[in-house]
Image 1 (cartoon, rainbow, N blue to C red):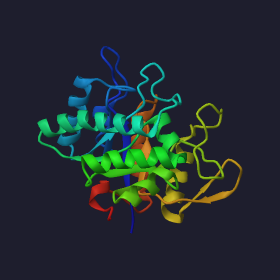
Image 2 (cartoon, rainbow, N blue to C red):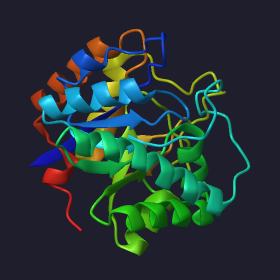
Image 3 (spheres, one colour):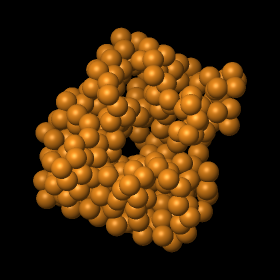
Image 4 (cartoon, one colour):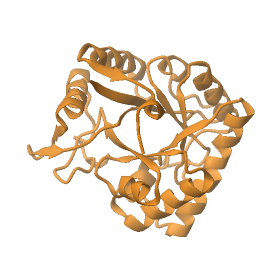
Length: 257
């Protein structure tokens, strides 16, 4: 039986600025990646998002990003492995505190944006991030780009490491995501996006923009909660995956060591 976790980036509202439809999307996902205030989010938003996730039995994840509110954490920064370590520990602490205060338990950590993409290609950054997570709580699951350095570093240090794929992003022939600066980075057709995910889960392959099939493993699929049709897509992908015989389940329920 094919099984997959469905995760979404959440808690990205900040002060008076509201982003996404988190409350509604939480009904269709199994894991939530909650912004920690560096690239998006604020304390009140973190608390509310944690509470809503717990009410729906959705796995709570930390979504640490670079300290770049203006750029939404999507601009590359020249940080050292030690700085990456400190950023991760600090931001895990924020979501951990709110989760514990609400009677819950953290499930996973998924770096955000540029930090995620930087780590996917940098062994030293990945090792620092994995070490930070392991030292805070070795039971946490690390989400990283399928085939990237972050997953390798997590496994090396002893973390359960989930290979993540993206429903609405295109891939390069080396298995990396197409840069958001490129016109064809995003998949806007919902049917195309869902068919890409179904093929990845069932066949372990994705078609790159260069027309080459790339082997890829998937434990969890990311959908984005900040798009115009995010809620509609969340419903559509959830229904479509189940209709294709794919079970949607919280990652902590099926990912082994």
